[in-house]
Length: 441
Image (cartoon, rainbow, N blue to C red; front, side):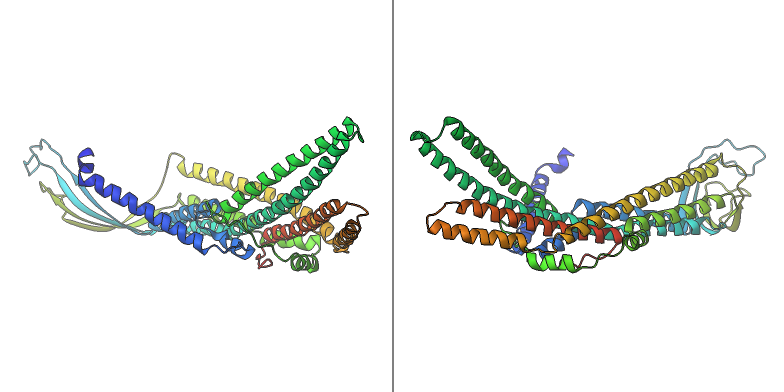
């Protein structure tokens, strides 16, 4: 190995490594250039089918395994070609015409299964059903990725709003603290009042630091989902009024209709049904192993010493009738029967989980929609309060403008949280019932 890598070998490996690194950097740079600035929700959702995401990698791996099983099943009805050879020394019997001690042989053997009472066909159909179970999960993988991206995108926007609100609150608290410190020096307030205000300021300061950390954490999570290693600083916020209108106006079906739809269309349940079908077909195939197998065989051979049975060519039909297989076929049947029981158990658990999630989301969406019966009341009140505070501030009657701004930020944060929460609830419901998530585009 060292001789192979010596001299030019090391140069070659170094060159390959350098080219690979440059290619990866070029691809990363190209991906970075393609990301819009500011980042949009539409672009983020378009990255749901990212090939190197864990969910897509899992799907690709399962699909590859299922395809391999299907190829193995098809191979059983294919043509098998072998070259068989032997080197053998013998002491020939005196009654054998040939006195040669070299009893070597070289042969070309060809065989093809002609009929096996459905063994092969059952296994092929079982592999197709297994592949179908994997493929039907693709929509579920994609939906779960979109829900995760939607949640992460909204979390970044909320983190930015919370940070802005914390900065306003900290500024107001600092002004209040500075004012009380001046009054304390003049002896107008007690040290207890000053200490309480200082503690309030430190608490608000800790909230501001946490809000800043949350900004970084939420951005890192979103970057992991759509553009690992990079994320634009700015995100484009969706039109809250439009998103709110879409979420509120969208009809919510009856709980029984939604549950029935989910039990009929949910990808996980559809995948389980395909797996059960595959197991049933495998069971039929294993049961057919107790029946005869008919094969066609051809052979061309060359012998070091020729005897009466040393045929140059052979062709024939062979029938194998299994009498006893050490219990292998019964073990396969028992194992597959156990798998069927396990799959039915999984189906019932998934069904119960879906029914529970449907009920929770239905109640959540119903409650959130009711909160928008008078959607602009809070914001309108806060706006009026802010306008009043500005007017009083200009007249130098009071100085509660900062408090009004914080209250307005609280109201805006509450509204954004409610709108985003409702949108995510709809997305989760779509994923459960197998609906396409085109509602956010």
